[in-house]
Image (cartoon, one colour):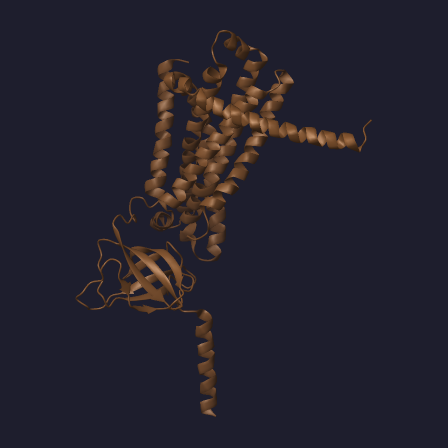
Length: 156
Length: 264
């Protein structure tokens, strides 16, 4: 086979392969959009994290502002210690409320920031003081049943 | 004379034989690495092999990728529709292709399309004593014949796997969005939000590189080690395909268990 034709085909092949990688990276993967370049760390303690996972999202007003980087058990307070990487572009007030929500009825769980009105901002490495645990469905149902039963007794 | 002792002896012989071949293959691998200089100094040699194992495999890889994507799109839609979450079709198609199907199926196709032909070529060269003739002329056959084919395969395989995955995603999009009518924006945005570049795509590429090394080594080794007869070469080709397939699937399990530990 002619050398130039061969070179042309191999060049075409390699270019096609690299284009495929680029397509996977930019169009299929999240290299272009959701890449958090500069982040800072925030901590939060929860009584119960439910089904929260590492690499799960942190949202404020529904917008992705960070990801959970680490979850561990704190043996002193018997709580779950959650570490989050927050996008460096966003700062949150000191009285921000961190709660665990569920996306949809059966969706993944995420941490939602409800912003307060404090003028001082959370600094990198700070802890979010006010937190709300995940809703455990069994507890909710048993509470509901308990209330119903109590109501039934009152009306007698 | 075929008592139970002979049975044990043949078992021992088979075991020693296997281990000896494994050791020989390992030494052969290092010999290739040692004599790779020529493959890169005389680049046309390697380019020619990339043409034979890569460019000529394009058709089978692209068409298979498209059809695998089409089937994934159809079956995924069938199942997801029951839970009313057809927008997640993009995630399903992309993750299964990028993480598993892309590298594995492309590897299997590569082994049967390019691996077998590499084995046949080297095996026939051995059977017709071309390798010996090269040795006589003080041309190292490993440097001149084996190493370019090995590196040609190693370079082609990840590119082919990436094309397979890209084509598959396109196939899934074709069935999901164009044919069935899943929302286009949701398809891509859901996909992008849950396919991570480092965690999913890079790990898939690492897999395909590992498979490229494994298949290329098996192909050149079986060819070089083949019995130099017509029957021996045909057996070597069969062994290449079978061993490659088993190695790819076993390596895939091992790599998956290291890469994806289910804490996403």
